[in-house]
Length: 357
Image (cartoon, rainbow, N blue to C red; front, side, top):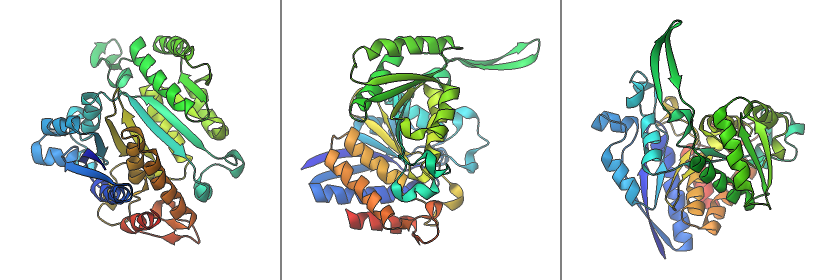
């Protein structure tokens, strides 16, 4: 038996209810394979603001650092929208990434065969399937660069500096190459090196790292062209590596190819095995507590944790296969519902997945 300590930041809105279903699934897998998962619940996001006056208490950081992995539900909501930027719930997410040294965000976008009709593209664009992994640099770029305001002859101006070092680009590129090696051996680098000096350093560093991975095909796209090609030929992409702001936008675009953002997990990784796993969707406070949220993205985030932090490949695949079987059987939550399918609530969808496990 293997024992794992997991920090749980359930978050706001639908976060706690989808996280509860994720825990049920993980416990079932643990029972099946002989693993023990111990959970320690800590506050982050809006609920932490309400209780402690800050989005990310030091206690939460300490518990997460001492854990084998972190599960994060969605944070934020309209209740805290009027707070200044450095006090908003989303600071918990950025703060945890920084505190845990998580520089690589993995965002898979997979179109399940059973959900092809939910894809907004014409069938001919996705007839060969969609299975993309976006590897986004997470702790650099303009989100973390120098920022401020100043007076100019045009009035007040604001600025956010886009800056990357060679080391930052090297480590995210190696992560992407290693992932590509285990998939279809095709990596697409996305930058804007025809305009941005930061992208020119990015491109040259990617090319240097590529010398260590001759078995992986590498190509390059400018970000504007990449956004177009994701729509025109999504089936030709395998792994995409890019910077923070480009990755933020492209991964959300890729997510829409799957039919619903409620289907998409993500992982944030650093140098060691400690990672943070969260659904891509938001906190959706308007549907919180109504048992209608889709728990699949959070459940698949748990599967990613088993794979990337704990090295439990078979256990992860059991969850992924169970989700596919449930979808193939015609079960749907409201966000992916279509004519002729069987509509389930949040808890009932988890029940169906548990039955397949």
